[in-house]
Length: 365
Image (cartoon, rainbow, N blue to C red):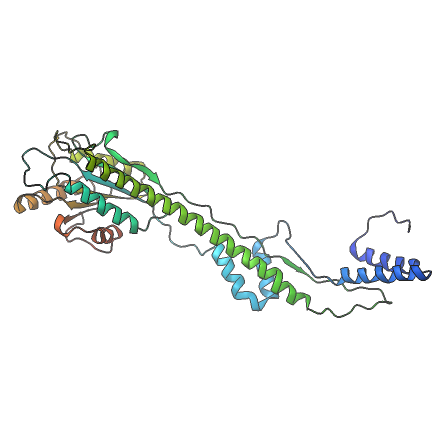
């Protein structure tokens, strides 16, 4: 009706619409249409604008939001730090190797009746795993020490790796755009009921803070779910082995005892993961009858031995000294012995976490 055929900006549209209101106002019905059009112009002109600017540097947008909304500064910074925490020390991955002795050398009648020792070992493993602070990238594997410790058939767990959920990225907060004031002299702009800047801070910025917090909370829930599944897989494997032992489908191995072969599996884990902290948690009597001549390279592995009870205390001390010297000579970082009567999941956890250091455990470099 006005014969306009050009593309115009918002400010130009305001002027054109205002002139149109005058043209439309000729006549009684025209005046009504003019008033309605002018009112809509003023409403559009006074509405505050808040938008995400494509490609905008989040840090720049954050600085502006902090400057414009000082009352929200603490919440804005907290949201930023939740999504982008300050860099800390790089966490070293942990690899845990669980080794359970099922060898039963003929003549060892002083042992508790089968299967008391391995069944108790799996119970302590379940208690230890339930409380161990696993983190993303950690790995576990479990196998039996037997006459063929390195055979695939001796593996009862894994290897399993705890995955990592990608951290969310920080979206820039919305940008405040000062609302334009209507320029029609016939209809002066009324003062807004709510200051546009207050509305921006209390609505758009508050919504942005809530969104960023929710992203972090969702990430944490997903990571916890992965950790729970990781633990559950281990607990399930231990329970299954206890059931197999109880049913007689997992029997003691009377063909010999290959302790060095078991440690060679740990050697392989350490060699394949040089950046990880490898720890071997072993439930064994330290008997080795295989005489294979294998000499594993333990590559700074921490070895913790929950020592099955031996018949003669003097023989027990002799084996501890022998295997401490031998494993240290193969490159272990430490070799900790805990006698069976003193073994508990709490003590094993403390040793694994470095909270408790067994006297004489450290290997000389």
